[in-house]
Length: 435
Image 1 (cartoon, one colour):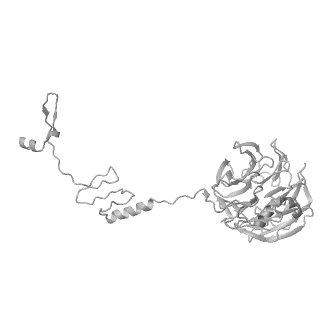
Image 2 (image 1 turned 30 degrees about the vertical axis):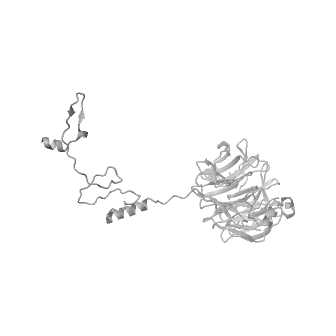
Image 3 (image 1 turned 180 degrees about the vertical axis):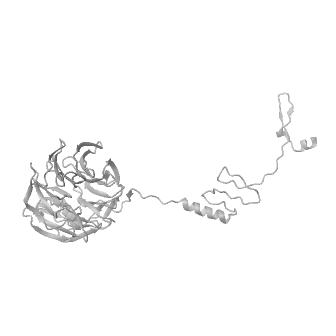
């Protein structure tokens, strides 16, 4: 036994105590260990030597070179590599497709945009035919609007949950950018009076302010209702009005993100809203009332006092999907589902003009909109037959109708600088420009 102790012990196994005597440690057996692969899982317990050393949770980086890999392990690695690259959800903003600058616009368009001092010589003109077709929406388009400060840009809102910004006359890609911040269909879009901002609303119960130049969503305004229409205050671009499916009308302050006025009444869904020219009054149109089908369909509100000035403006049993105020005369028009455009006074008692109306087009239940041109001498209306109808505002006669789309033409808006240019959108997702 002493001989074995001398063979399997060394100086490193002994330690002298304070008396100078070496402390004898117990005999320990140190067999030579076999090298083995260290798996990624630290809790892995080695299996017997006669079985392949397979890691049940193999590392995703791949096998060690030179090591045997069984068929089962190869299939495990293959499945793991597939899981390691999951499908990424779509980004809330599609990468910029074109440009919003005027650098690549044709010279004649640039000259027309800058020649604003000659605008009066072309007022009253109407487009002659199709100029540009803008493809990008996959479902129906609810609204289009030109930018006043950057008149080469057009915004459109679609049921495909997107907002498209079009550089209409660009030589390259006309779709400058596309935003899909909304989680549901987009119902309306409006340009800010100052700067490259658009305000949109939709079925996700929100209104959103988007910085077009930076391509980011700057603010979101949540509500407890589907928001169907938004409109900026004509004298203060920091304020906007929103109307929703529960009949709520709210005046928001963008600077604080809070509601400053609410207009409450027992209304159905708000179809449209419009400020008068002096911005002292607000005109709203709602769907079927709970008490009387005609009462409350059109209401004139006092903006500051939050009270209705009249709720029996329109006595007929039709809803009105669009309301527009004349730019200079004291009256407003309402698109009626009775297949005509009615005319009302903007002064109390806001009477309906029973002797004049615009009627040649058809609405047929679609949310057809109507709009005045720059000086208010022409009113344009979409139609369920796909045409744009142009009426003389004074005589109410039909001046012209222009085939625009195969399906219902939902909106038709005049350009803010070039009087003979009109943009339209349709129920099948088309956006077109006529001049």
